[in-house]
Amino acid sequence: MKKSTIIVLSVFLGLLLVAVLIHVWPQGKGLPPLEIKGFAVGEKVEKLETEGPIDRIDVTIGNEQVTIKREDKERLIMSKPKGARADKYKVRQILELFKDGLRSVVGTKVEGQDLKAFGLDDKTRVVVKLDQGETLFTAVEIGSVQKPVGEYGEGDTFIRLVDSAIAYRVIGKDLRRPFEEGIKGLREKKVF
Image (cartoon, rainbow, N blue to C red):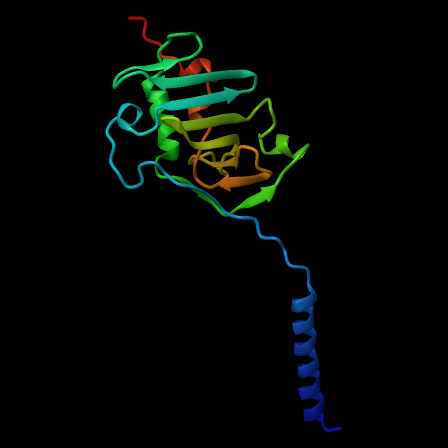
């Protein structure tokens, strides 16, 4: 056999082998991307907590749970302690997280012991549910924040939809910041 024939035959067999491997190789089941639509995308809302469409926020941290409702244009009332006012600044921070929506294509399936590594276990996760009237807008579990090297910037937050097995990494957003002081930190501190 000629040298050129051997080269052509070996290239042909190599390509055939690659084609067979691509066809036979198990296909990775791609995880769906996370996409939570924003409630005021591109809009400029001056007082998001009083003028925005979200009028109820349920927050659960560990064993503590509170509901924040908009009573009227100026009052945000907490369920515990009954009749207490919610801190408008904290409510605005929570709503800002979801105003323009959240997107991520970096996802992984988590369950059991993995939940603690992502901050999504029962003790550390923050469950947030936003309602527009009687309609649930979104319900998410917020996990731990991975700070960037050098401690500058917001960091990346692990998040998952309620009742989902897929944890996503939302890059460049610290979704836990409004909840750093726990449920008590959501209460207005003004005395009079």
